[in-house]
View 1 (cartoon, helix red, strand yellow):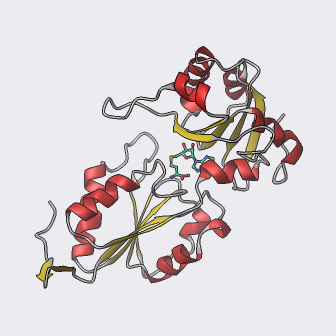
View 2: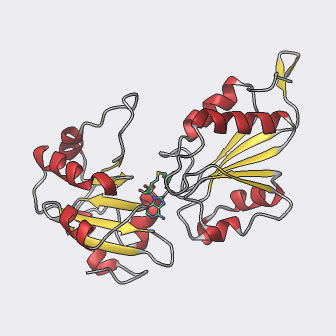
Amino acid sequence: MIKEQRTLKLNGERSMGHGKVFLVGAGPGDYKLLTIRALELLKKADVVIYDRLVSKSILKLIPKKAKKIYVGKKSGIYELPQEKINELMINLALDGKKVIRLKGGDPFLFGRGGEEAEALSDNNIDFEVVPGITSALAAPAYAGIPLTHRKYSSSVAIVTGHQIEKSEKVINWSKIASSVDTIVILMGVGRLEAITKNLMEGGLSINTPVAIIERGTMKRQRSLIGKLGTISEEVRKKNVKPPAVIVIGEVAELGRKLSWFKMPLH
Ligand code: SAH
């Protein structure tokens, strides 16, 4: 249960307890890609609520005095339901705590940051959003793949490959296939076969270049470059696992030439 509001109305303005929630992006993995604002807030946090994708090197930056609460998935066990996470943040803020809600990448890109901000707003909790470097941009960059290029791509779409709940907005793959030059897919490894099929039905050639970057920016980053028609088979053979970013389009091919962080798998 969400505690009774302690918000006071003063001359029409909202005055909160001193608690506040910061929806903070932790970046893609490498702690050096954290923003200065994020680091500053972590150092002063009372409580840090974090997800599975926040890397160990970042968790190490949290001072011992701060309480760390993990709300991500453990093997086989489902993550804390979203409403419970919302309640936790709200109650801690109402207790006057400085709460950091730390999320992988950027909090407003496929991280349910929007839903959490809504819950905070609905309950009159003071909050701030600290953008983070999203894996959608960082993983391709670390694999030497520019998402736009004057010769090959002048548009990019970032799409989720994970669509399970009926309430989620439906993805129109053929529309995406026909309207952008570069498609970046997050959470797509498990459904790659169906996604590639949909994109080919939507008009993309079987020879469209595709790159998959696993654990982007992390020490064990791997990348794989192939073609739309055969990539799902290769991914299975090479046992590519989440977290991974998929890049579809001519620019993916540039990863062969510009890969600077680690040699590609093939
Ligand atoms: N808000 C996050 C995305 C959360 S969705 C962001 O902005 O990055 C989770 C998905 O992000 C994963 O399934 C994967 O597709 C991608 N992802 C996150 N970190 C990654 C990493 N280090 N390397 C590759 N993909 C990553």
